[in-house]
Length: 323
Ligand code: ATP
Image: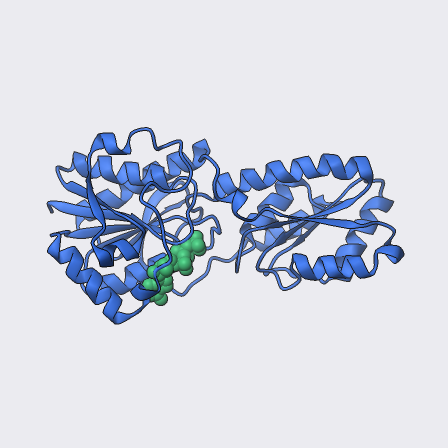
């Protein structure tokens, strides 16, 4: 192996830069040339890539986002798009590719692997929904950002005896909402894995007030059926009966942009180095992740199309501790 490339794809996650840095420096340590591909799979189609040296990845470990840029690339979902990417990679004599990204991105990795191109994926998404890694790059930082917002809203909720609803990211997985709810001491948590209709959410808040609490905090995953809009509508329509109002805060993209915390920097560094180790062993078509605190590889074939299941004990625990 002489020349590899690395790209970041899908939603950006804090720690992606630390992973790029680790791939580049570990690759250089192997004596390889490492190219950075711009804008995810789009750059692999268009040939937007640059040779990266150790200094090019200096001063980025503490930065959120990704210096390579990330893009959603619909073209890569087509055979023609992937054939073009393959031609471009071959033209540039790239022998293997490291893909840093979430579920969709690793589906793209698997498609490329099936076409015979050596690919290794690195688990990175703030949703933490990727099968094959207990924890993914970015989720810890995103969780801490959500937590800071919850802590602040709790202070103002207590001062005004007001209920607050905080919507956090998570299209199909409630991990972020569940953990933010547990760590932030929410009275109710609404996630796709444990839906709670609006009247039950209202009951939980009323019961909390009756137990002497001054605040009512509800954490909702954006992908829940009873999402922020539906809950706000119900509370708006029943405000007089309930005797309190509910204010909605959507954290949205604020959760993505933060500087990566120590956990994500170290995780990304370990996984980036792990990806280069896998390539050096000739182990392709795998996802590099962290399981029981060990860097592991899982065949992309097993990763694609599967979703990580939330620990039901944590869902139960959240309900008990909200009392
Ligand atoms: P996150 O969940 O953190 O936003 P992600 O990696 O799941 O990240 P997606 O937008 O789902 O983000 O996917 C990123 C890119 O991966 C897509 O724009 C596309 O280029 C590629 N991709 C997704 N699904 C497929 C597929 N089935 N086949 C080929 N490529 C795909």
